[in-house]
Length: 267
Image 1 (cartoon, one colour):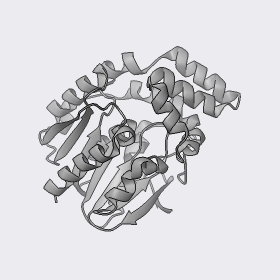
Image 2: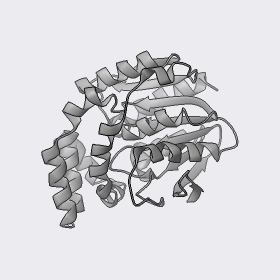
Image 3: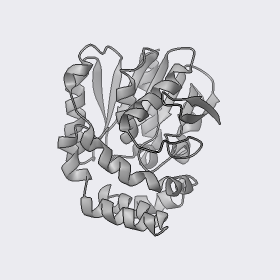
Image 4: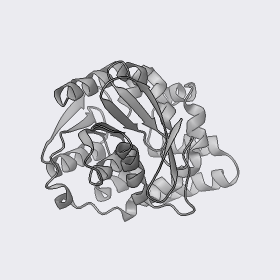
C-alpha cells in the first residue's frame, strides 16, 4: 500500500488498482479498505476507473493519533484526494460519507461526490443509532480482549443487521479487518455528538453529488438523506430499491451500476 501524510502528520494508507478517471472509496465504521472486496465491487469499478481504497485512521496500514478528533478524518480524506494529480470522484459510505462530505469543503480537486447514507444530522440519527448502554458493553468487551464479540454487538444491536447478513459478513475475507478495527467503534459512536450540522456551509458547493439511499433503509437514513439533499445545491437522490444500508454487500451489481451510471454523467 502507498501512504500520504495527513494534516497532523498521521500516515494514511491506500491501495490503487485499475485504470481510468480516479475514484476514491471511503469505508464506514467497523471496516478497512478490504470491505470493498465483497461482491467484487472494487474489481468491477477498477475496470472503468483507477480506484483508490483507503484505510481510515486507526486501522489497516494507516496510523493514528493519541487523541481522536473527527475533524482529522476529513483532513485524511482530503490528503488522499490532494495526492492525486487530476480531479477525483469521491465516494463515502456511512461514517465514511461524513468524512467525504466534510473533505469536499477542504479540497477543490473533486469531480463528483457520492454519499451513501451519512449519519448526520446527529439530532435525526442519534436517537436511533446510539445507545450508551450498548457502547459501554462494547467497551467492556474490548477491554477484555473480546474484539470480535464487540463487533458483533455493534452490528447486531446498533446496526440491527439481520442474522443472515451478519453470517455473510463473518464468512467474508474482510471480516478479520473488521475485527482488527473494533477498537475504533466506541469513538466513532461518540464523535458525532460534537458534529455541528450547518447547512449554510454547503450553500456555495457546486460539486455534482449523488445521494444513495436504500429503499428499505430505516427512517433515520431517509430523513438524513433528505436533509443533506436540501443542503447541497447540485445533488440528487437515487433509491436502491429493496436494499438497506449495505447494498454493496446485498446487491453489489445494483450498487455498482448506480455508481457507474452517475460517474459517466460527470466525466
